[in-house]
Image 1 (cartoon, helix red, strand yellow):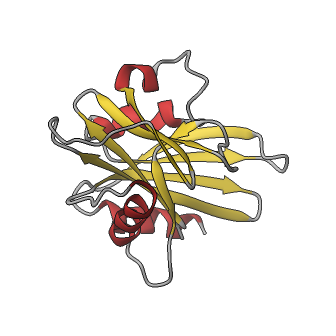
Image 2 (tube, one colour):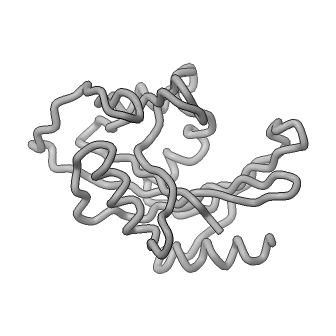
Length: 172
């Protein structure tokens, strides 16, 4: 079962990103999200997490795909959402929050291949998701937590959450 959600909030050609103060991905820019609470749907989780961390009430987060981590002994992952804010939406940043620093970053900067300040692997999946492609991005790791493989599996655009659960069930 996927245990996390993450949201990439877009406003025109900017992304609202979080520079985390704790592991995982400490010191790197990432989307905003977190862990499920008991009984939550992916949509409810991402709406709650974005509200708690950024003070933004998402109206219609769009499930854009999944990221799955396969390690010896455990498979986990996250639902990835994309949400659009109107260009005139006023959200002053940077701002300090409990999880780190939230700031607007240019989309080109976030996706630049030379940018080592972004969370690992975002450049693998985020461009596809922003383009409306719905995939399960699967990363395989060895016993020392080194990545040994990456693949993409298509998810049904109509029901990506159900498709992701079906893909996950086949793996376990």
